[in-house]
Length: 96
Image (cartoon, rainbow, N blue to C red):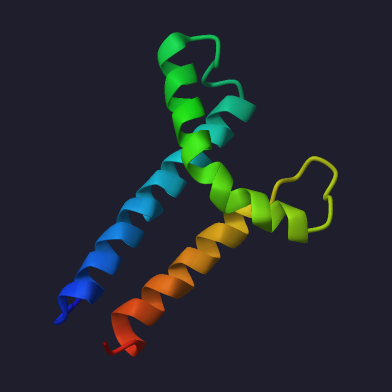
């Protein structure tokens, strides 16, 4: 991506880091739910709680808006799509 402005480059870097943290959290949640990973293992537990603490402030407002889905948490999907929209806007349409 071409980022001619420093602020735009910094915002793209920050959203890029958030992107990878969200991907790691989503994949790890699948692995935990399918019992590939066990949160009783200290390393898995530390990584899981760290990622959850980082992303919970993002997910909580979305969970408050979305209706309950009987055990299905769509907050990460909504947050991920929102992050992609923000990255597209920063990369291509916002000119500082």
